Image 1 (cartoon, helix red, strand yellow):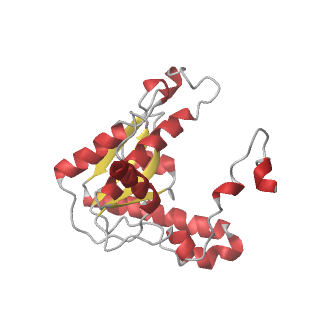
Image 2 (cartoon, helix red, strand yellow; image 1 turned 120 degrees about the vertical axis):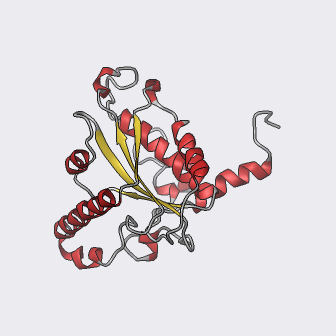
Image 3 (cartoon, one colour; image 1 turned 30 degrees about the vertical axis):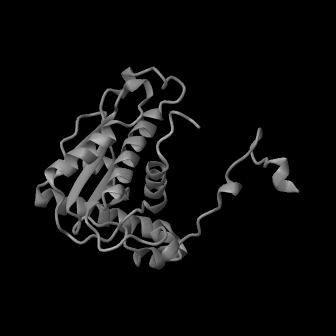
Length: 221
């Protein structure tokens, strides 16, 4: 018995939140109580961070004109992405890629300015600031799912345009527009799987031993 392990029921809850987390695009309006939103953001703030730099910044968008402008920026990039996809452009345009208009809360997750001053853990891997912010977003995602709220990560936007719109300082960078709020139902599978856009790969294809592309000997027999 591992004395540090959570009770079985609590372990099951953690794994359930991971397994049932979905990148949501369909929301049912409503609202997120202030204390609940604070709790979810506190979970994000407890994420691991290289060198304890805590590069995350979360902007809550409550101005409806700003929300509408963010939607327009995402829609513009959606069209550009469709054009870049070539033969799959029509298929892509049929996908719902965001829930900006319908979600209860809209957040923009960004990297802070002045990140170059943080060397610890970033001298050879400067992108660890992105990794740290991603961990914070995942904390927010899982805690939202555990509390029955949906969340969607929107990355279809020009970061320079979003930064200018929100008055962000030079050197900072928006990484995600996060749609958060009540949903009528969670997808049974990732939405892109349900829509036939792509099939998820099994774990065994993505785990190697000792050398890139090498699988365990026991798996070869």
